[in-house]
Amino acid sequence: MAVPKVILFYVFAPLPDPEAVRLWQRTLCEALGLRGRILLSAQGINGTLGGELDALKRYLRVTKEYGAFRALDVKWSEGSGLDADTMSLDFPRLSVKVREEIVSFGAPEELRVDENGVIGGGTRLAPYELHELVERRDDVVFFDGRNRFEASVGRFRDAIVPEVDNTREFVEALDSGAYDHLKERPVVTYCTGGIRCEVLSSLMRSRGFQEVYQLDGGIARYGEAYGDDGLWEGSLYVFDGRGSLTFSDHAAVIGACVTCGAATSRMRNCPDPACREQLVVCETCDTAACARHAA
Image 1: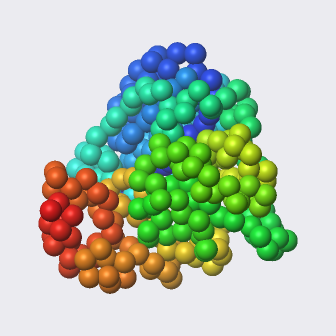
Image 2: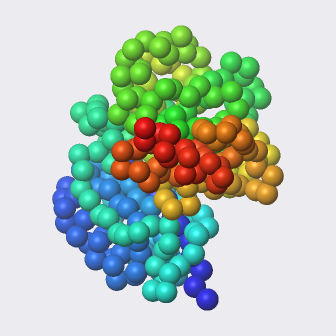
């Protein structure tokens, strides 16, 4: 029986011809029966794909043969299942596009990339190094690099969660001065798989934050190392049909249903076209929540 898996991956590296890479990547994914989303730019690749284990391994083997993608950072997780054509249920289709940015901060002119990745980013911390820093220092600040709705079901303990609804709002938030009081403290940025913090940490450093770190591999790699027995609390929001995932059978439930307030980690897109929000909603209140937010 086919084994469904999902991979999350990225690498920052100069691409002289992103359109040619797009055509190659689309052809490769179609040949292997993979679905998901891949974004390309002159600064690298960012994607998530679902499908059979062997097909995903083949995809990674071929993709890493391309010099710019040799250092591809990859995280694995369990998929929901496969349909009759052995294609991932977590992704309705395959999308491979070229964009100005592979992470949409709206500041492409500020991001500098060379063959070694982002220039001027924060100091990378492996999960165990993060623990060492927290044990050594009592003034460490966790800074969530995701949209606030993602943090509603899971985040690092006592983390600062900026009031942003999309990644483009981070630049305005940093420039507002709201976080200037953190400029002399050790700040650990974190996000789902590590890519947003590559950019965010460089933006913070260029704005005078003195001691900036980024959690290498993001929450996904931290969860692989420590599960729910470390500094993480709750579920990890993911941008596919699964909605969210947990790292163990004893994950904390910190989300609250928008309608009744019951504890839940269930997330979904509002199905009403007039409602564009991401909702934390229990199964019982699902329909009522959508009607309320569409009003």
